[in-house]
Length: 123
Length: 108
Image 1 (cartoon, chains in turn blue, purple):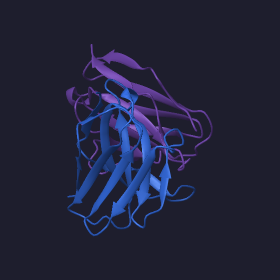
Image 2 (tube, one colour):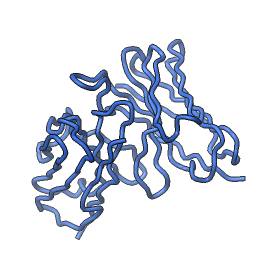
Image 3 (cartoon, helix red, strand yellow):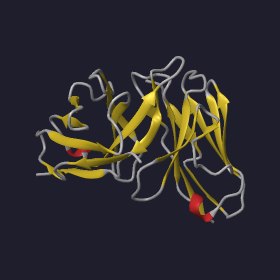
């Protein structure tokens, strides 16, 4: 059974960089898309971006200037960096897996998710 | 980006009820639509993909329909464990994946 686990600081200061890692166990990181999704307290889901195991990426246009997602296949991990954070970036951050898409899309829905980790931006 | 609008945003229902949630896309997305269920403090769980295909292990009381811009999620006989928030997500525009705002199903 595939499992995803987020890790990283729970508190980040304004203007600094948020860094999280997702460790994948029970399966290979190869041949899938790996994504970050966040959810501000009491609000809905926002897709941040995804990376293919080969390293190609796509980011949410609204966050693109601040986001970097990378993958380390040797460790079965992928990571998120979000720079210049503000209080608006306070959220539960989830990592998730998607299969290759079919037809007109390259990515399928998210079938496995981590449990999520709350990151608070505050001085 | 394609905007996904869910309605209603919340409603109350009783165990045994048949309930329907609607999701509308701001432009056509064919059948590239997924539904998720999220319970408090938990990660979302994939219920349906390709608008109407049930994810493995999901009870058959859940069903989805629609294509183009209008989609529905139906729970044929609401169970106690179904009280949760439901989200739709389009994956047609794979450069900008988007979710609906969510529909909270509460106990009447």
